[in-house]
Length: 274
Image (cartoon, rainbow, N blue to C red; front, side, top):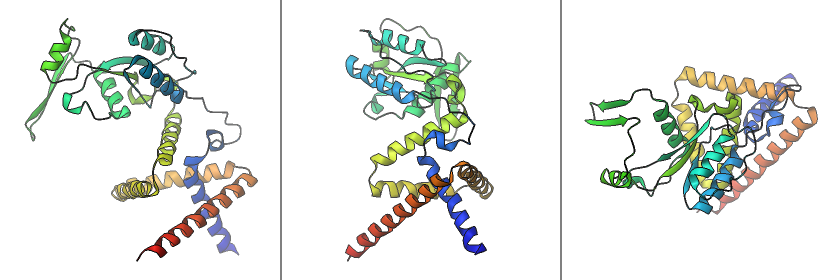
């Protein structure tokens, strides 16, 4: 009986690792650890979306911005006044206008990459910088704090930039740790985003995404891959040990039920193939 029991314990630990992404924050803590600080980033995104619709603009919110208090939608007629009021109540945040190349005007920007770029440019100390890539024979020009002329729209158009800005709300501190957010807070926020994306995907899309993730994992350096798996297993076992026995039993039962359903559906799908 020793070996089946050991296999069961291994399975339970693996299940804990797999299910940790789907657990609410309070179940990912050991008893007595205290509740995690609430991050109202999702509520901020909702407020920004309402403002964008009402004022007919595009607002991008930094997914790594930690918002300590639930934001209220400012009752302002101008977008600049509304954003000033919004960020005034959020520590470690700011907003900027961003103009993109006309060729990219119709593409949906990635919020995290755009906010990272805005933050990096804003904190760069050099007043002017040119970075040349000798291999591609291309250069990137950066110029800081130049006065905005009265004909700024014409200047943008002449340089093939859009004249309609994106309004970017972002974390001012490097690494997205604004507002006192810890690494664990940011990790949990990413888990919530991952869950939301998974619910929007079809089974085929999800399978393809998982395949890409597995390929990325297999392409890791062996030492990094081993460390990654070790950290995940240790965290999963620690979380599993902190859960009450009835909750552990419920989780394993749900996992087994989902696995059986998935295998049954896969079998039915395979049976229909010629």
